[in-house]
Length: 116
Length: 114
Image (cartoon, rainbow over the protein chains, first blue to last red):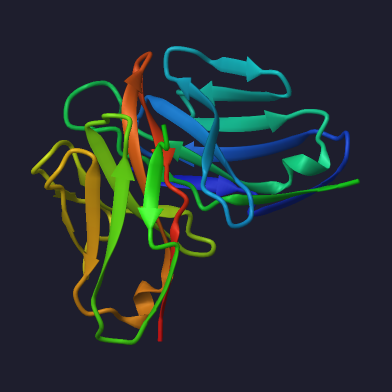
């Protein structure tokens, strides 16, 4: 089955700096890579995702890049703000038809702390 | 439109007791999932369902049973709770959007087994 490794486990930055979180996956058939943000005591919420037919996607201060050859993808947050502090999870899935049923395999999570 | 809801929000059980967690969604999604979240381990899939009357095992199914008698509800049961099942449980449902299934999570149930 799929295995997703996420690094680093904790990340501390100053407000205004950039933050980068990296994930690697094992199943070359995976083609959908979402990123979730989870604030303390809350549910995971989708912040951005990328499908395997593109190499980069951007939404305001966040962006995700995908390298299918190397089987890794990354989340980039620019101009970080204290409200970006949360746990971030990457995930991978085979989403193209068949028997995938949208199942997600998650990374272990990264605790991001943005200091004012 | 409430999205995905879960009951209860918190529960404390003694070892050997049983309980059922309820997940409900009002988005008419076919697929539903149960995850558990433990510190440092992300979310792990327990069971999932691809439609009313169907269930299937995920990554960590032992000690749990599920049922999907109605499309909008997905129940997770613990027949004989163990301390190792202390965790936060999240339910999710998904829909097909632009070439991928996007999952929507419920608020979670924090379960402690003593």
